[in-house]
Image (cartoon, rainbow, N blue to C red):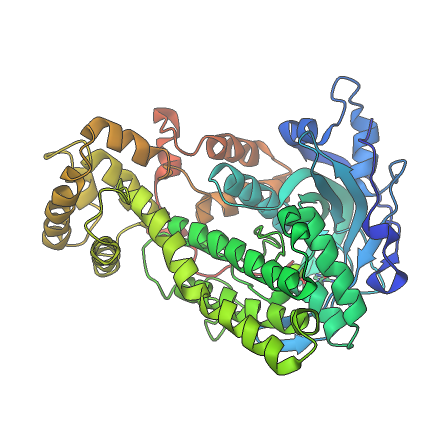
Amino acid sequence: MFPEFTLRYAHFPERFHTRFDPVPVKSPRLVAFNRPLAEELGFDLIAFDATLATDWFSGNRVPEGAAPLAQAYAGHQFGHFNPRLGDGRAVLLGEVTDGEGRLRDIQLKGAGCTPFSRGGDGRAPLGPVLREYLISEAMQVLGVPTTRALAAVTTGERVIRGVPVPGAVLTRVASSHLRIGTFQFFAAQGDSEAVKRLADHAIERHYPALADIASPGERYLALFEAVQARQAVLVARWMGLGFIHGVMNTDNASIAGETIDYGPCAFMERYDPATVFSSIDEGGRYAYTNQPWIAQWNLARFAETLLPLIDDDQQRGIDRATEVLKTYAAVYEAEWLAVMRAKLGLSEAAAGSDSADRGLIESLLEAMHTGRADFTLTFRRLCDAAEGEGHESELVALFERAEPIQAWVAEWRQRLAREGVAVGEIAQQMRAVNPAYIPRNHRVEAALAAAIDEEDFAPFERLMQVLARPFEERAEHADYAQPAPPTAQVFRTFCGT
Ligand code: AMP
Ligand code: MG
């Protein structure tokens, strides 16, 4: 009933991981299960046995064919290098082949103390587990590359996070759990052979077209460039949604280009580019507006690990990697422009110039900032405004002062006219990229609180339902589109993981 495992990482040499079975929990209860994802992965849902599934997803029973292990990795945390992090509470069961023939990792997060636990308890509290479940699944439908959530189980045990809270296990599915930090772990030890092995694995799994490049140096340089491109796409999508990851350490940067390790992440409400939510990010290193440049910093750390593979001569390797890294700004800017143009109903073909469109987008953001407008609602109400003159009153109402946004709308309408497409059509296209519903922090917090304090999962399920169709405004969910009332605004999110 569990899809067949195609073990790959388990067959890597011992220094890549430690074999480790999940530590059983007291009384597991399956509180969330992602049937569509299970189907995609090849689970037999007709023969679905909830008791068995609960045992698997709690770690109480190792599915047949799995070879559970904790992966080794290092990472720069807030700019400081830690040579040994690794899976301190996550266990990779193995890889399965999905319906499209792609390998997917299945990992239990919160599965007990591993040799990498470094004093942690190896467990996960229910709150962060449900948070990751909600937000990763929301990101998926919002069109952002992301790890997925297959199941959540409560353990019947308490974990201490200042106070005792219910424990849980998340089953996470990823294209892989290769991180920049995985490469750093070996590079820091001067183990180029291991780095090469990882690079080959990354190419095979995520960038198979590169395998045809005959020259090894060119091939690994191309890997760097490909990872860079995916990071640029990823961060551009985050920026288009007002998403703040919160902990963009190199161990949380996926080689596959997926959003991974949802901790104190959040979607911004009132637009302010300097927004930081994470309570542990005191210097604002991972503020909204810094994210594209932090991704680049992380990519530089990745490039450093590949240098010996790129060229035998270190200086030549550095020069070549630097050449690629220098293109990041242009690659990112192009991705961002594409995302933002779509949000504003603009096509590249009808643009006067990139810089004119860029200026138009930036002046909207400026108006949102000074007008203290809600990020998500601004773009959603802009879709209505695209219907034509007289349709912008709800948009304008989001701003503290009407005049700047009215002036901007007039300018935008002139640009829209060049599109040569019926206004209704433009509005419809815009509604397909500007969500009405995002996981608003106060809703997420309320859903988590009900589950934690009252074992009431109804608010969580309702929120999941709303977020499953984010682009479709439904009258019965109107409340979910609204920002937090002043009393419920969330300014700080806690790792507490
Ligand atoms: P994260 O903040 O989740 O990206 O984790 C950073 C590092 O801390 C990783 O090596 C994790 O495995 C480890 N870690 C986080 N929470 C725990 C925990 N409760 N027990 C053991 N290790 C943990
Ligand atoms: Mg992490």
